[in-house]
Image (cartoon, rainbow over all chains, first blue to last red):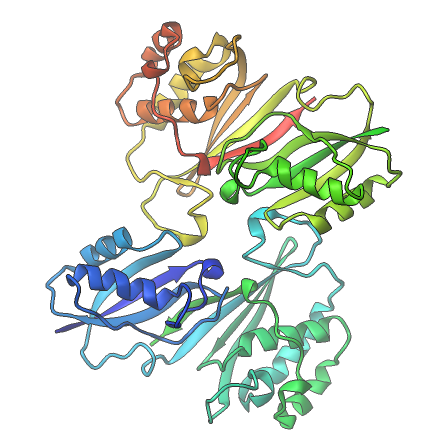
Length: 245
Length: 245
């Protein structure tokens, strides 16, 4: 058996999320169906760096799988893409050590969140940005982001229903990039809890619109209570951009 | 009654085309349903500058409709968009002379066709560009385009099933814009026949790939036979960009 590492990209719009569900279309199920065809009906399990939710996109999700087939790396890309739907693409495949694990070995991740700060209703962007045509104090958002950097218990920034016990994570970078009316917020960290980036964005928007002050961030973290933070921003603006090993 | 002129944009992916059909989702039907709601159940007819096919996009389609309601121009935009699906947007509404006709008064149109010249499979572009990862001689395509400029009978570049009698049209501009691996071909003309831009693109691609020489264009025009020209390029790369009055 050879372990393979692959980088994949998907438009999350048409998926119920990454992980296989009893009902509905998922990224994992599409990948496993394609691999099963290549393996003439033998099921192949796919493991990702982590789940993404319904509507969340990926530019650089990483997966691993094992196969007994001696297929060259670049032919895996062609073979898988020929079987996958057009909203899901394999960008790169390489042989990996049999000890490699897409989830446990992930040292960090980059997420990006895209906001459109004008009211312009663009049918071509409807699934890819969160339209937020309200005044934002970017300087206050930058200030708030500095309180979020570093190692914290992010319980307040995690969906209440999560099962994970350890909610301590480290955020290494939060950048704001304004290009015309498009604001991209970049998050780099060791790992992110369920809905964490979307709650971070919702909280930064609350700061930008004056509902919260940057100085309230430390007490929100201390409260360890989801209801202390801002709203969960919509899935459509969120991209899993890169996974670091 | 007041006549209104409106500029609309739509992602053609989810539509069976512009014009109302017995079955399936169309742009016209969505617009007329929204107007009927605003007019409390009274049907309002919408007339466009012309049809677009299933999967063809519009950045600046123009329509007109009549209404007895005294709604300010910018409020029409808000009212219609609040009722329209997210893949269809009204960008602009203005009062028009009662003699204005979106189709008969159109003096010209601009279409753009977007090709991706690399094999990179981008899930986010699947409905918006035609992926064409083959060698293209752009200089030969430019040369061929010069034979297409001006006033010609474009029977060879029109879907055979069309009912229009007069197939003489004038193409004023054909431009090629290469940005990275994205090639945009811009067509400006007095009007375009059914499938004409897509057949022009298919024929230019045949020239670019060496299957036709630029010098064969005049004889293709003279033959007045659809089978003399190239293939019909896919709808997903085509955008009705602007209508001129």
